[in-house]
Length: 509
Ligand code: NAP
Image (cartoon, rainbow, N blue to C red; front, top):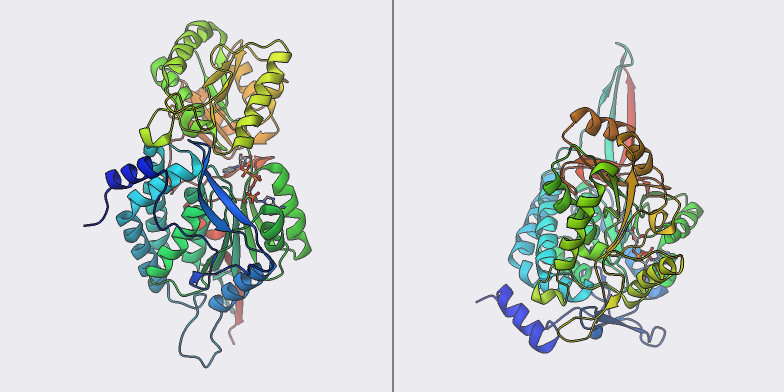
């Protein structure tokens, strides 16, 4: 009998581990023992809910980077014109669909194990981790169904010509991802890339590489040709930087901070590599006086405290009309006080902060704010799991009546910290909402459809949700403007990243 979710949770709670976790980079269909003479470094993987090591992986270096690029290039175009076996780049869309659907089914069967691993690796609550895996299954199915819907156009050049465009896979894509949604973020790039016929190299965050390695193994078992999906586990400055500047890479999908994104853009420039940049955010939840306040309250809490605020599109600013500010804030603070936090396996409202460095960074932001004379209405402290006194946590925190130029308003903190800005009226609320250098996401709560759509039209962000923060799913494109990056993932736009347009024109005599 396959192990159930309860079995995995019980094992993880009693031993602090999950058995048989991968330990090495996955290249050309198998785990690659790292050349120990040259790369003795092991990367320790921490369970942030306990602040203790629960796994170890070998850190890859130049040799593994070269192997991964060679494997991906070979899988993309392994056949000479005379060969009978087609490469992944030349495979039929139906074949790619079959393998991706099979992978979705396998992930569904193995969802419990993936969820518990994600829970330990990234500090997530079990419910959040289960939601992540469900969304990954949807992603695989969405792009499996899209493999044969990659259409070109006919182009009218006049009656003496037949002209059309055809879409071809761009080649080998590199996926560099952060630690907050390890599998979700990876798959929203890897699934469309594979669907388009690209071969991929993944460089997951060194703190959370386990689900990426498990995914590569799962894809191999689903029938993906060896080399079509490779995972290089290593540091950002090491393996990540080497891959980003490698001439064998045709497209880079980078998700992470603005600072690292700039480094990757510089590296990509060396080979003129096309990039998609998914960077940070400082997104507003705009609450107008005419809204359904109960829905807005729950929406605002969800927007900032889901995944302990470690979401690029977190609603980290509440922009609220003055006439409802005081009673709304009172209820918000009460609800924030009632939220439990602790180890994700116990399924509290809020899980851990994924790394100690990140927890310390959040703490520094709050200490600096306190030094400027600001006092949190609730929270404000780094914490441990109340049951075990271990782990890296941060109390749900709210700072009220902030000036538009305050660092808490302007800078991405990436934790459970809500900045409240009070607006005289709807017009000022709109102006405040747009007043950061980021442009990722915005939510609005109002019953006035003109105002809602007016905000959707005017804000310089990639997506707007009305009366439900985080509304959407894999079919809805996602991405940012300004410092939040460029390009779109998810939806059919996400597939376009991995397709190159070729124009063909024929003169008819
Ligand atoms: P990060 O430090 O920028 O790291 C992201 C990835 O880049 C990691 O895999 C990292 O590897 C790698 N990396 C580091 N230096 C590199 C280099 N010189 N060359 C190539 N790769 C390099 O980001 P993070 O702190 O992990 O994640 C938090 C950030 O991600 C936040 O700013 C958040 O907003 C952003 N994010 C954006 C989105 C979005 O869709 N817009 C989604 C999620 C997160 P190592 O881990 O080994 O250092």
